[in-house]
Length: 207
Image (cartoon, rainbow, N blue to C red; front, side, top):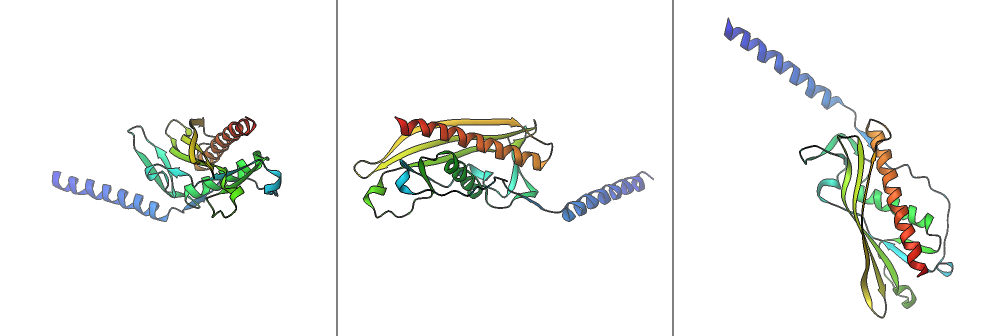
């Protein structure tokens, strides 16, 4: 009798596990991206005071993953299986930073990457590097983007030199208790960080 009950127990557990796996396999994959509005703008080198080049954002370890990251209590970072970024996070963050800085720094020529330069006048420029250590939600209901940015200056006469390093940490409550709320909060944090960068650079060009 005891053996029979034990067999029934394991059979029920097996059905529950198979049911859970079946539901997971049938779960729809959802894709997310930043909803940063785009305004028509144009700029020429003749009416700008400096050139700023934004390198591709660097994310630590597994954070540059299509699965949206959540940090757990035991120092683990889990990537979602069914809630994914629509593109690689480093590319999305770089495009967003470029757009925010281009819009805010109206006296700068802001470009992405490091194109080939043939004109001597264009060989003096600032270069911005981001390094993200956190880009995730947490089980306390926050969105966290933390890391550092470095600013370099390159001139034809003196070459490349490091101008400044800034650490930052934007940790704010989610706008909604779901992945959509997490994405919205991460985007707002990233815009706040880039607005702070723009403020620092605006002061720099006036010195």
